[in-house]
Image (cartoon, rainbow, N blue to C red; front, top):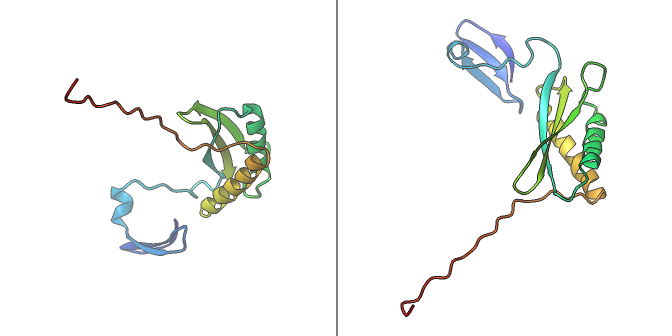
Length: 147
C-alpha cells in the first residue's frame, strides 16, 4: 500500500487493488510496518516455479532467465539483474526460484502474473511439464474373522 496522507490521528493509504484505507496512526507504532518505497531503490522479488524431474535443469534455467529478461518490469542492468536459483528437490518436482528487481512495487502482482503466463507458455512450447503433487496410498487388507 502507499500512504497518501498523514493527519493528526489517521493516515490514508491506497492498497495494491486501489482500495482506500484509513489507518489509525497508533498502528504504525504498535504493529510491524513494511515500507516498500522509503529508500526509493528497486525492490527484490521472488517467484517460485516447479518442473518435472525429467527436465533438463540448465534448459529450464535458460527459459526462466529469458522470460524474466523479456519482462519490461524486471530490471536487467549492471546493478540489478534477474537470477535463477535451483532451490530444491521437491516431493514431486524440481524447484526453481526467479529472483528479480523491479521498480513496479505497488503493482508487482501484475508483473508476477505476466511472468507466470510467459513461463507457462515457454515451458509448454518446449515440452517441459509443470507437475502436480502425487501421492501413493497403500491400502492394507483387513483381516477377516476366519483368519
